[in-house]
Length: 286
Image (tube, rainbow, N blue to C red; front, side, top):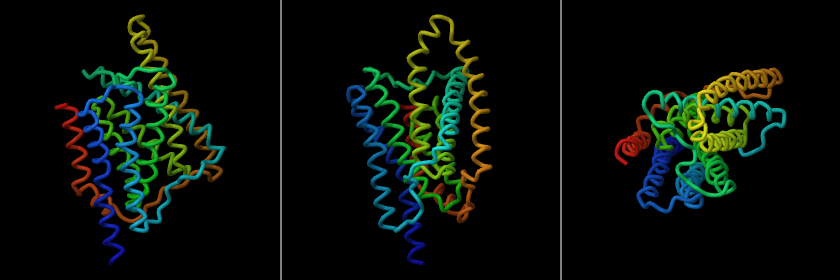
């Protein structure tokens, strides 16, 4: 009974951590620091590094034993990770452009930042991929995994998407979060998700640089056609690589875990709803 109460308290507190991440991002935006790659990296540390440390402390206090998946993934899985990340990157471009067609604006990866290519890669690709994946697909996913593999991956992807605070990027962030969660679990390594996230962000940064020039030169529709064809190609390559890994038993199967009641308890707690509320405030009022 005492251990059950500890798990309930942990679940309640875990539910507030994505909202804490969003609150840190909103506070940083309210303070309006100079928009530089360095300030963007500081924001990432505050928004995802600090909650990750808090979650690890909670995990230690509650003596939670679910794996953090910090070990390396198998070398044979590298082609699958690369093909899957390429497919997700191109899918993100197509989903973002679908939002544009519905009347939104294109979700630029650069976020208005300016700097050298190296500093932009660090601020937009490397640091976010590392901190966000360690938080959402290592610490957070592990903390809610008792609800079952599928529900835990879905919850981490939803929180990941809402924490970005962008209505335009919500579909692509949700799709990417689902893939990253599955990679981390299936290959038993968060570093597969980190690599996929890094490649996706780097590709999105390059697209942001080239989007305006493509529009001015009239190449944008051809780029979108190439993105669609590329997505189909990399999806086929990733499915082929996945089949080979499955045949060799290199992919973990989903576990039913405990019960959906654990996930429903998290969804019914104030934390996730607070995250949604802050997302709506960010989108419609700030």
